Length: 366
Image (cartoon, rainbow, N blue to C red):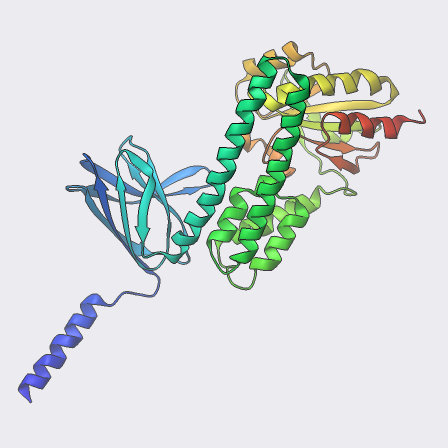
């Protein structure tokens, strides 16, 4: 009897020592190659790095443990040696990587990370194709082969369309994976309002507790507020001279709100087309409000001068935190919104010939 009691006591004690709470994670890591120093468990929240924990890697080994509400993207940060991204979840997780190859960790114990690696394969295929096409495109431009360049531009557009379709398929197929809302927000700039509504519906039953799902919902609200047929949300921002310009005060003309920046290559490439449209239709009642996502005033002013942008310009010099761009759901530039004389949105993201055709349609009878 004493032996039985002792055995039960031992089993109870052992169980107590090894009981892991349902939302607890334990991470064991191994860094191969020469590395001695601190490692940091981190997250990136809205572009800001947050250190959650730290450990000293002894002979390349380190450990972390903590609590997590739902699977989420985490990073192992190294001293000036980059970082390793992985999907953390309540589990016992092992991470092994070489100090010279932090982009290729071996992660076990996280089913979410398995889904994440599948997504990375899709991205790798897309990026390889994109690099190849861009290389051919640049070569065509160097050779002044406009016909070939135009063909390659079309191929790049088709590649982007296929990539977006592949992402949509992955997200809806893996609608019970917490990786899917993360992927959605990582590529939110590629999805229009209808895409996001479709994704939100597909994900709502299983992974709605993800903070990324909440971000999807927030973005839907923003895009609905600036959709075609809605009155453009008002804002006030300073021009080059520090004088406030209010959007609603510009009503009375067909107005293009043009989101751009001096550092944005595609924006600078599009500027000649915008200038041509302004010169052709300004006298008929067309105007432009340039909203710059610059952070350096001198660069902003120089680009305005160099590109001959003679319309009204504003900026808060806050880069991607530009208040107006966030209000209008702008996540990539160039981007624009076309308003009628009453400030109602009648089109979005018109570039090249599309902008010219829309203005021709509007002013045909003028």
